Amino acid sequence: MGTSIVDKVVEQLKVLPQEFQWRMLEFTRALALSAILGIPGKQLLRFAGAIPPEEVRTIREAIEQGCERVDANEW
Image (cartoon, rainbow, N blue to C red):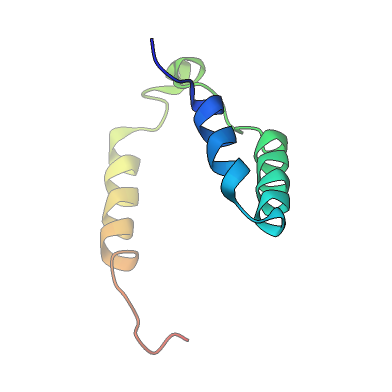
């Protein structure tokens, strides 16, 4: 079947300086704590069609007119 991802990561960690090993440990801990937030799409299907088509068009037009422009002097 081949080498697992965990085994490959461990192999790479073994050759890194200890400072980088600590960084990787901190990084993996941070990843483990970061939960994927949100709601599965299936649960949102009940809202499909809840906004009238005319309002959807108005929203789409506002986005196209105001949100697709870059203001180079903004910063």
